[in-house]
Length: 116
Image (cartoon, rainbow, N blue to C red; front, side):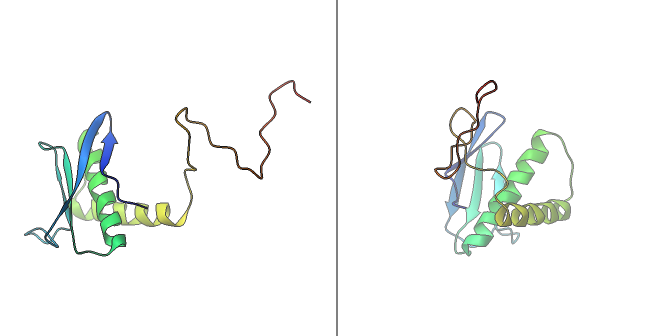
């Protein structure tokens, strides 16, 4: 999983920014800033930590938007579990702009109803 330059959620676009320090003063590996519409990831961390931190901040984003009040420990456990579920399983195949799944060259296109 590449780290995207932006995250869009409910039509809001949050820029993903890489900070030069390795952690925040409180020891966090990333932060979410609604005023600036930024997710900040602190550099000098391995790629898997950067990915999991991004997902952690996205969980905070979702919780804030839907008014789900989770404790930090709950967000950490949820994002950790989601990270591994998403990393280990191809849950969502790539889609085209119209929301359909691209045809595999080895798989025939599905027949329309009424076709023989």
